[in-house]
Length: 505
Image (cartoon, rainbow, N blue to C red; front, side, top):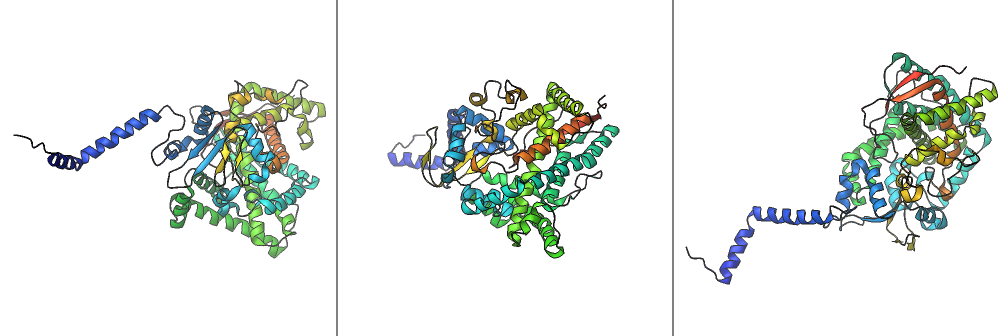
């Protein structure tokens, strides 16, 4: 058979071939594999049209570890771009120089920003953690006045001690007697939830009790945090569309908000309708304003700050101790030395300042596992970060708290090691890192955590009393990894076995 080789015949033949689906599949695979081969060794691959989004979604299940590796490979700062048809443009940094510039030196130019405000609006409303400018300043002054007052500090210390001694210790004792493993993360989150509810509302829901009741409010907070975390990694138009359709994680969030609002508004009504007053934050704020939305937003912001951050920090602390028994031994000896000096068996809040090594161990655990792993800012005016990166209005800035604590060029070659000694100077005193912008567990600059000192009192008291009474050992064979959420909870909890410790002679 003789082929017709005229141009028109050849063109027709090409058109015919292009109608075969196999050809298009082959072409697609060729270009895909060619692109993959070029991109596979890059820390942050770029894909046609979608840019960096596929890489982010592919690593969403291990977001914090992945982004730490990427930003380390890029020298501490990277620019992340979403699909070409979106306005997703993110600058992520783990460079302490940039963080100080953003949080302190040029503070006014980097507010929380519209993107953050929108993402957290349903949960936090216009509360202190989701506000900017004058609204934030007014709330910050109010929070400082109340949280730093001697009366409130004493109230929180007493509350923590009572809950530890009357609820936490008995539950751990029963677990030791039963010789059954327990989820220590669940127990510690219940403990801090009860303590925080007592601080905010003046009463404890006794979430930490022998029957381990399901507390819808606490579960709703967890669901809301996980759902909001997803808003970090997709274009805003995507999650807004899901919200309008009430689908997937947005449906989960909307259901959680209903539960949260019902719980908080019930507490507010008790004060308005029954005249309940006390030393709790809601009672104090209710004297300033009876506006329900303001009180609701204030209560939710304080509840999240108190419950999640301390409970999560303590969970990772016991995980680290279980892997470093020599650190546990030093802490225990320090606590016992204080009790010998005081000539008593029971630890009191006023003893905590003497527990230098315990404070260092908690700080070291927070360096590696900060309760809030990522901070977010917007941009008002174009600026150049100390690293040389130019940021413009419309961009989102993420300062990577989890990554900052693990950067070798920031903390040294032993940056991934758990070493409380790095927090103690030659004179045996604490080496504070709160203002160095390489330790960001309590944020930095004007927005440094208001409750930092109270959090340390709560954590030190709980940790010391638990260690005096029990050994806590992590069950072997379980997978321990951070959950991709706004708060760095453990993905699968932390199963441990508890044994009673012999009393000090």
